[in-house]
Length: 103
Length: 174
Image 1 (cartoon, chains in turn brown, yellow):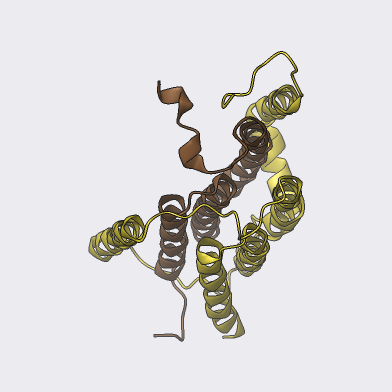
Image 2 (cartoon, rainbow over the protein chains, first blue to last red):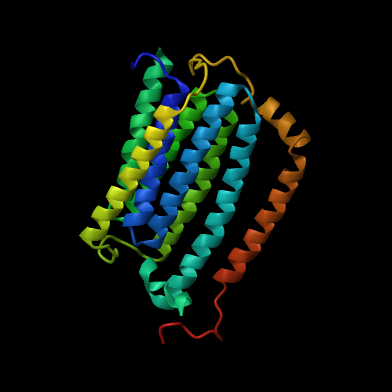
């Protein structure tokens, strides 16, 4: 079984990484680690896109991965600015302290 | 054959360090483990003949984004002492939930017919090379490429506006 690699192995790897990312979002309260878990999920999707693109011989998947990386960079820049702002106002990065928007 | 062993090695590295990202108490350690996960995924891109994306992954993710994370963690002076933790019950329920989702995905994949399955290695496709990707990017996808540049500009301005110190706004907790 371990002699050959099919597309299934890549799907399993990407799914495992994605679920680890979801687990991180669910069990951590640190806003920065939450962001890292989201990056992990984005990376697993990228890996799946590249695997299918490589298997199908189509370059479009890799172009999409390129765009996803760009959007992730923009997201991280704005998100970390928001976290720094949150820390400046509440003196903590606990995501549970950011509940003021509810009321 | 060598590529097969490399795949399983890289997959093990990626999953192991991804688990360490989630479970390590210190945010700086989480960040460094995430860099190693990115390296493993970049290795997988090389195996899949996507050399350009492997280099971009190393430069943009491991180089730029993770350095931004590290800067923020060190700026806020975070360590494992003031790390907020959830209760064990919530951790238990979250682990059950994540595991169930993985189980659901795997069961759905087992039921799916993926068609004729060629081996992933050796891979004769050359579409991941920078020449081919550049041709596709600047012919078919040139409009999204330009739109992405506007997105980058907007996020740049947003980060500057958010990070600016505003004296007039009162802190929430006071």
